[in-house]
Image (cartoon, rainbow, N blue to C red):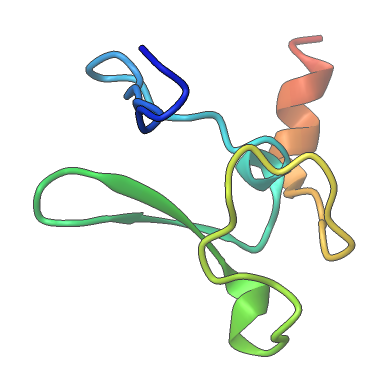
Length: 80
């Protein structure tokens, strides 16, 4: 591959989704599936606040609007 060749994009292995980072445990995340089975992470904050992208580039490492889902907190604690 030479410097003038366009970069190639690789897809996750079949059946695996891209990790969403903070979005995976955020109360504002909505998982959207299209008719072909592709999945997208939509940010619910984007409806009311233009600072947040509707479909953020994943994985999200920092976000001012992040709020952890209650079930995410319980999952991180593990069984008692």
